[in-house]
Length: 127
Image 1: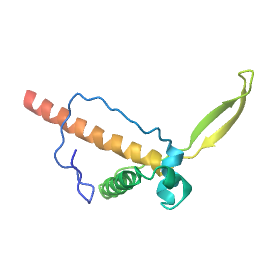
Image 2: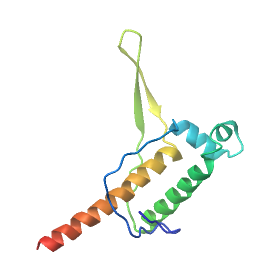
Image 3: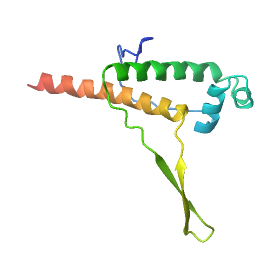
């Protein structure tokens, strides 16, 4: 999918693929690296940091374009269940979403938009 600097989705295509990742990233590590590009987390991800920063800029452009279209943002509070050693519920904790989570969410929304576009075109051609 080609995405312009202002978050406009251009040409895209779907095809069978396999994703192979050599990096084992966590949302927390990515968020920390993006939040402090000179910090310890960023140093650990040094080789990936430019790509992560590009993804962050892409996320922000997509988010801004979606806001300008008047889309609703359903930012909700997620919870995490914590169990004790015997498997009983010990507590429920608030799970904070960060920009790394939102990068993935915004990317999935963009992919869904493209899929919806294909489905709409397919239905129109069937008529």
